[in-house]
Length: 357
Image (cartoon, rainbow, N blue to C red; front, side, top):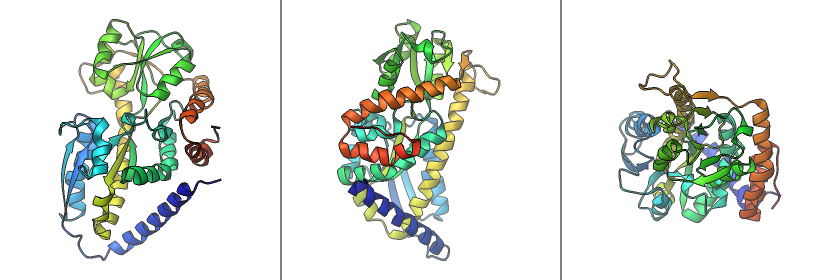
């Protein structure tokens, strides 16, 4: 049975879509948008997704499309001296109006936020996005009711794959290895594979791989390349076990103060931003793989010389089974009854699986 808040969320989503369609239809001959200044706290300023997609969208695309009606001030949260763990609180309080919230900072203590990035459920970008879309009504309700924040979109930083300084040709080779993981469900997945999971700050990974105190580390292909992990790793096992999802959102009161035409304009354009971020994530992952493995397609110098290992169909089948039977079950134990029901009615239907509390 559909929970009340999921039913209400879907109804609200439907009405929003209808309103958006009619709003866009009527916008052709509408009056110019009212002059509006927006304040945005973006993602990490060093990330290429921020530099190449996010910041230009706010500072160039929106002003151009609004015919200079919209002016935006944006800085990455690290440029403002903020920590990822405090972003949602500051957005709830209205200190941050528009912003990006990496879910990895909050998922460890809020199980419902883990649902869209349970390790191993999505081994390709399309499935990862379908999962995020399916669960969006649930997350929208959560953020609005608990945090007074409106969800505007979900995008990934990138596929999370394995950098190993041991020979890894398949999932079976991970057994017995020590692997640095990022999220709890990643840890549960590698442990289900017979490996040992360790948590470690990003800045310590290079030395740990170099000293062989760990055998593998999970990260985005480009992130690992920029950190020069290719210098202390030999095998790049390109099986995505996570996507490092980020929420683009706005303080609810700040949103409600905006005129309706501006809300319609922003929602339609933010959809474009989310599309571009998903596409950029895929391209970034491919570029990172090329550069770590020394492909001539990589324009960066120096390039790595890692051995690229693609997952076999047997690997994909095994990861799906372990993720569904082991990882998903453990996640359900720490999430509420309603949370599990909502999973089954959304992501579960999409993936044709279900989980019991």
